[in-house]
Length: 129
Length: 303
View (cartoon, rainbow over the protein chains, first blue to last red):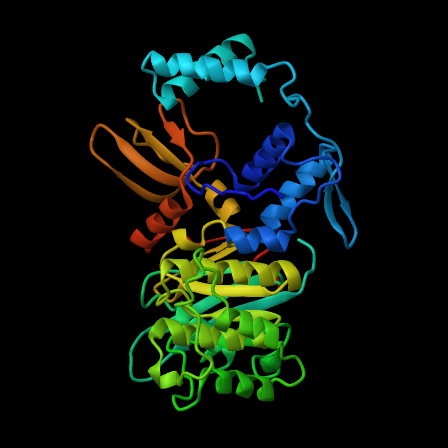
């Protein structure tokens, strides 16, 4: 089961944070097809956000075909975002090596993140919205 | 807007006391659709408690009317719960006795489990139960925060369609505040309960409310969906001074630079830098400027 963490100061709309965290969980395999998402009640009791915000996020995920609402049962994962496989290719391990190297060079956590982001943006720029 | 039922509706609502000169509340008109979570915000003395007391039928308006769940406060009494700021409870009763009294008074709809969850459950991570109440404790021996818990437990047990809560968080610690807000959102999710809660700290309710009433000087200054209210405003910064065409809420600055919060009347010129204000900025700007025009977003006022 995913647990959502809402950062009220991030400037990212709350429903978008839920959408992003769900997708992240799908990519990492924390959520798999058939899994049930927490109910709106469960989410709002834990996070103290408005129920409509959760429903809006779930509708968005449903619109993208990632989850489906089953009447009276809950919201279930339809498909995963399986672009990160269980590391058969060793991608994650190589990234971990890279992090070790960066650390040895004296880079801080944020430096590493910024460097990765910069390389990613250069190679695969984000689509203009 | 569709013709949804209003959980709370005020039309030209006002209250003045004979001895005091001015109005405590004047010309309040708004409409709160059912199922919303409404933050009632404003500084002390703005009229928040008066508005809630009028809605609860504790006092009668001297002008206008207030409709609760489509009828008058007296007729709707069994269907809403009101928690006053001073939480009057019988001091000699125990916590369990108070909840039993609640059950007796609300036989038809009483939900003992819901009341018990608020009074007795406490989800501290390490199993610390210091925040939960002893059923045998007398009300008079309780702290302010513990009394609040009992008063809220009564409100939840009543399983109301509408909750009117006057400063429910004021004497709760941060953990209890968070739990209460979570429990309230859970009620709203499960039963579609309409919730009105007053506070002078708006950031506390940010993210929880999908409706907002800003009171100031006995008036409703802003009413509507917080996101819509914020989106209606823009922060302008620039060397120019011409703000014609815009509704100016606040403008501050020197000869060289002006910063203004406006409701844009069209695209601002090139010499302005624009930014989106935060909800807090919008609210504070209205409170600092009592003369700024009120804003009630679409759908809130509707006969």
